[in-house]
Image 1 (cartoon, rainbow, N blue to C red):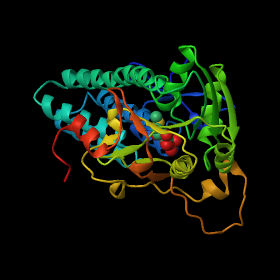
Image 2 (image 1 turned 90 degrees about the horizontal axis):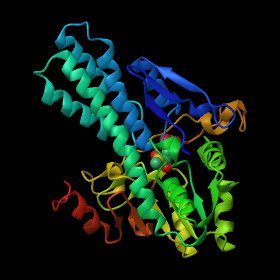
Image 3 (image 1 turned 45 degrees about the horizontal axis):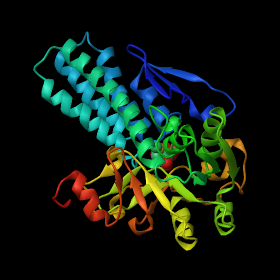
Image 4 (image 1 turned 180 degrees about the vertical axis):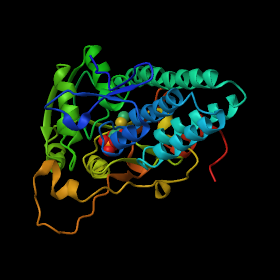
Length: 350
Ligand code: MRU
């Protein structure tokens, strides 16, 4: 069964500290927004839907903690919480989507009492969590229909229960396919430099009794060439209106290799990961992280001290390499400019 990656404990947030996995399953109880911002920045909680939920809960946290103050100051604190959380990570649109949803609620309830606004903010954060739970289930069901009766699936990073409120997006498809009796094996790319694939995906699939094998990222092409992979399932951090996808760095490489080997490459994501306001992947902000993660990861130095490092955390996969998007509503096929705009409305983004 999936783990509870994030929970609301009546005025506090409880998360799994994912930096400690797979060795230790440690829960952190968070009661200050600065602590939450640190947890998001340092990937104690990560994955696009999960950081959206965390952002929404962060606003509820502030709302809970300062009710004794003058109402205007309290509202200012809520707005400043939204700003602080928006600065944590730039790529996953779900964070901005969830924080904008909280902001709209603040705007529409401004005339109510502090207690009423606070209760509404908590309800909204909990709805975002509950919606995500149901979305994972619907995505899982839609995506499982694409999986053959016997399949070997390659995945990258972690788009499972540790990245969502339930059993994940890409891994939700795996869990649902297995539940429906399909024989599924998974290869998990280890996902350099922070190893979300080997630390997190391998951990949660193993805990759930799913057949999983870890490979070095650079082994993926060889496995495809050996016809060991039937399809590739990945999550997404942001999808532009034309279907270009930002996801964990290394995803683009897999998509190119998949095209060469004629292997279906599926992106599995909720509609909250689509950013219909931007026309292409050129406009998706790509997070650049510290070079220390590459050359001194997990406190082991693997390059000379002082060496120059470039460490983009995400890359862009152009839409023409994506076979289909699995969403909670339906499976979207090319041309994406049409199938995405059919869902989000007829007007093209500016
Ligand atoms: O840096 P991370 O671990 O937050 O990156 C996560 C990913 O790239 C996931 O594939 C993506 O957020 C989808 S999670 C359902």
